[in-house]
Length: 175
Image (tube, rainbow, N blue to C red; front, side, top):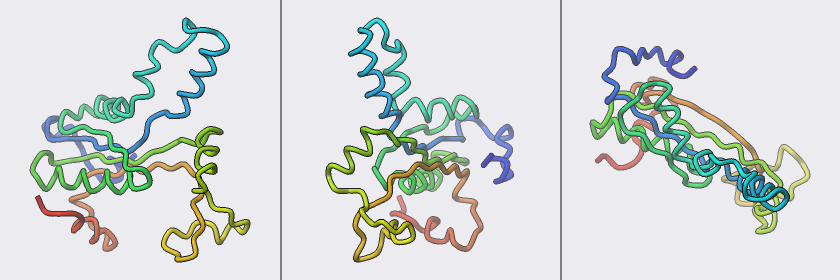
């Protein structure tokens, strides 16, 4: 768990000084799943909590509830930059004095037939047959991206001490 790794005991911090920034698009795949249910079995068979479950804001709300975080709480979606955006937003909450500890996460699990088909349809997926040559985001000759899932949870980016985090500590405008 990231809080343990960061050696943070948030029980010693005022809950209003602990916040959550999460980056995700929610459960987009569930839309097509519930659409199929509606088509095959009718409106009374749709999940009554469907809207609550697919809303991206519910993810950060659940994390905040679990850790008793009552400070800033938001969910971001900036497409492929969502995880980086969450880190920068969490850092800025600390810089602005809105919180002392921020939990920031980037998480996505959107591999579904409709998501892959949609990205393939617009030509966004790589056509490279050699696995080691596929994902090259800064290469001039890149030909698309690899559809993947991922998750990262970091706590309190303002207190990181790794040399490679210099860029994050100096990220974005000072507000």
